Length: 358
RNA sequence: UGGGGUGUCGCCAAGUGGUAAGGCACGGGUCUUUGACUCCCGCACCGUAGGUUCAAUUCCUGCCACCCCAG
Image (tube, rainbow, N blue to C red; front, side, top):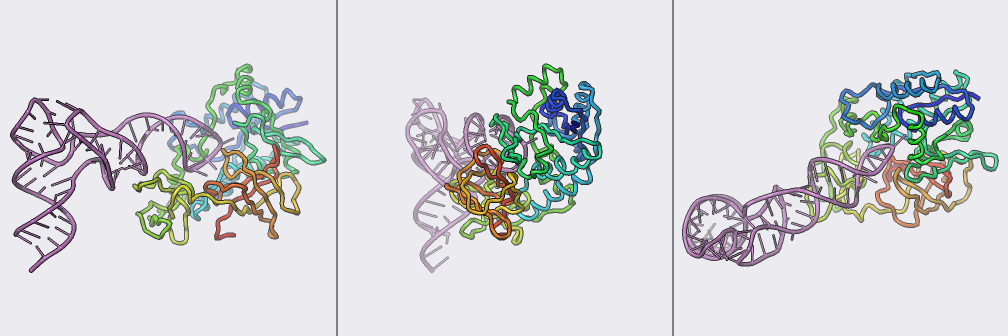
């Protein structure tokens, strides 16, 4: 058995590499070069894929005596992730680039390379589990709830799941770091990554402007009753549920209700106006491999760090999925992913559509 | 011009003769392999010049600004 390990330079994938090797696989380490290092990297930047990160990965691979490759996926990343990210914001949506990166880079382009290298498995440092169950592969949450990443993996197909390993998926983060330490990995104490990898400054809107060279025009902040409350600095700066950065004083906090690319208006309202019970998810993938033919009762997450919420889900004639929550949810946001769960298992997921698209 | 009113942090807004609540906004931090949210911390010497008083933002006077009414 031969495995290709996607090593980001972080602790998790390093330990994943080690564990895969221990399990008896012939291992090849690799790092995907997804973008040029941003011009300005802030101190203690918590992102991945910088030159330093590649060197950390190489260092660990060397320590483990593995071959190590760096794949240049910059073009594909620009096309499949960054451009899509920009398109979303320009259209009033709020994208989740990490999900796309998993889908189009780690479990697509990397698979092609694995085949070329004669590897039958792809290994990553994600916190999630894959188990065979009734003749199919079930994607399960990680036991370490605080680190569970199953949400960002819903796009995996049965075919992909059959060739993927998540060696640290059973571990707690503490245990992972312990293993890294025991093996003297250079990155055993490296901070967890956060922020969008190609937006190390945390200001994604500035990055969008840099990529497109466009200026996004100011527009009106419109209160739910139609009153114009002020000027916003361009729709790409806002997302549903957002409070900070509006700069408007009011008796109670104001939140973004909706971003309308057609009128260039940003609609505002109160906290209570953010709650709703229904959504339509498109571009849906049934991770479980089973497309339910009737309405099912399950749970769903509409953002990464959220507990699953009880709901019912129904497949529509066009393949989209209608999700109805038992209780109203705060700020169901178009562009974000809605992932369905049955207990620990990821049933599937899709992208939340806007009311206009529905 | 005559009569009345108001003047407290960027916005709204309490308040007392004894040394400035709160909300919003804003800044920082936390959280986080997305964007948000949450939570925490920070954030004024009370229009101005005098006077009364042991002590004034709070009392008095002038001035300035704004608002309303009247012509």
